[in-house]
Length: 99
Image (cartoon, rainbow, N blue to C red; front, top):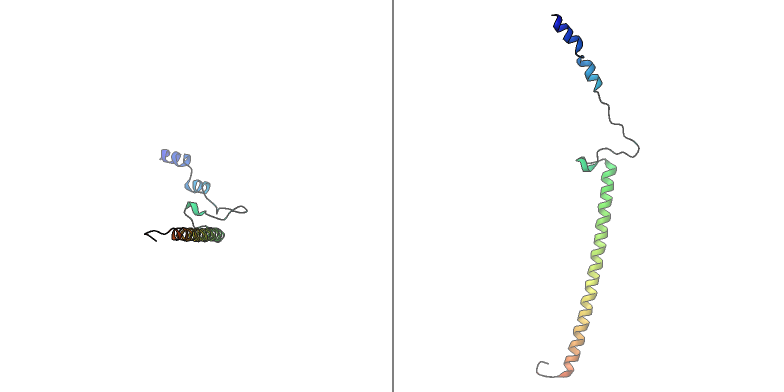
């Protein structure tokens, strides 16, 4: 009986040990916006909106690049057609079996 009393007195009570490990809600500093998407969270509305704006900017830039490439291809095709017409004009005047 004495031994149980000594052990209980030496062991900290569970209420005290739980109180030592209590947590509070995480306080965010200025500019902190919650769980970043990298860690599996979706982020807050600001992060989602910012990500959407970045994706729209990238899509717009890629679309402009594609349009510029298409225009350049069209110019090259026009140039090749001019060269082909010029070759046809030169060979037409030479005569021969194939003309």
